[in-house]
Image 1 (cartoon, chains in turn red, blue):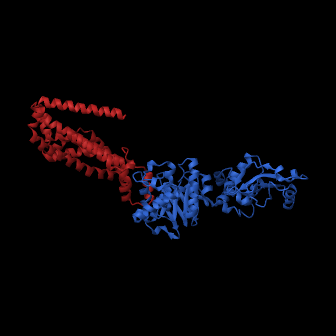
Image 2 (cartoon, chains in turn orange, blue):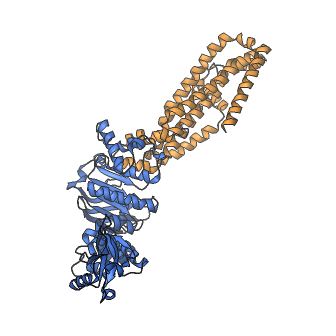
Length: 240
Length: 382
């Protein structure tokens, strides 16, 4: 197993190396470098879109998931989750378009569209993760004299944390992947280079947008993976 | 002490009202274990969970050490009652130490004091604190987890413990071991314990008293021996089983029925002296012991009659011996295995401690049925 992993890693590095040589010799690197100022400016805009909409989705999605999982909400929670599930089936491009019809163009509709698209997996996983905490743990906690709040913070959330994190990870992957579309409704970001590059058939411009977008997606996923590995207590972390 | 007065629980269901507990009255004296026993759905768990209000009672009163618990709020009440459940319920996200410290921390104990307590308790159940404090529940075996479950309930030293089939999910061999450990611990700690079980053997072994439930009512509340000897009605008799007399064997130890006034003799004793000893004692046989007072054989009067020489020439080997602490079930089992009417008993050091005969055993069982109900057997129950 480890031998195959090692081989795979070696092959990947070789591939990256060859790709580097090809890019350097083909002159694409120079074509991309022309857009350096655009890249830095738009990347900043892009990251801000991802961070703000993703962060807002976490800040809203986790509490909503917790709220839906409370026993007092039992009767309505499934209905609400059905609505959310239907929402998930709408393609993100359609979400962005609908958002524009509501809020016009610019940053607000882009932010709102991305926020909605990333909200769903977070709510769903928070809700499902909390419901999956075995009832005997809650019974033991209640019997020991914990308050409802203590049970939530010390027992339910820690035991659901892995599932909640998986939801956030999925949501951010969707978010990063959808953000280039924000350009279409005037939200800016690296989509500007990608779509303009496509329209002008300018490969250098296109790559100047695509490569940072891809790098950003990989980086976000890597960071989330590390967070999932390190922040979740050892006793409930299947990765450790 | 726990006292329940007319404790009642009614559930409303769309079809009809269900009475899960119907005017339950009982009292568990301080330091005793009371087993709530019955088939599933008989209300024993409901009765237990009303005490720490996991199920709110419909009516009735609960007193703990004379204090009406209705005066306390749920949280206060529960923090002062140890609670153990069948699924154990150790929190997987916490280490063993954190698990044990939960209630002490809720009660605002100093962290160092709580940690010390966790280490002491682990020691008490034979788990090395250095090895186990930092582990997570999933790294422990089922038996180890259940031990931790019990000591977690003991952590804040509550006077009262509620145990809901605590040993139900453990394999039979480990269950026996943990039950024995628990009884040994209880002999020192003297907690007042309510214990739900559906296993009559466990109830007889663990209980000072047994309450038998059916359809939310107590059918009989008495010592294990009285329940086995005098079931109050057909339901109780049926529930404790047709072999209830045999179950009573477990309640009595050999020590209580063995006769110690048995002639003993050494191997080198002259036959004439041994015969004289037997005549004086009006006995037919003597147990032969070695210089350390260990039983090694026996001689009978008939075989030695008129002979000369030493006892060793007439001695038969003993088929088996039993420890004097063994319960009568083990003794009878040995008797049947070796097809013998009597056995020599030994103390903890292997020294001769008396003789137990089959008539002794049947007499002990009969004692409870007589007019003087169970004198001398009551202690055997605890």
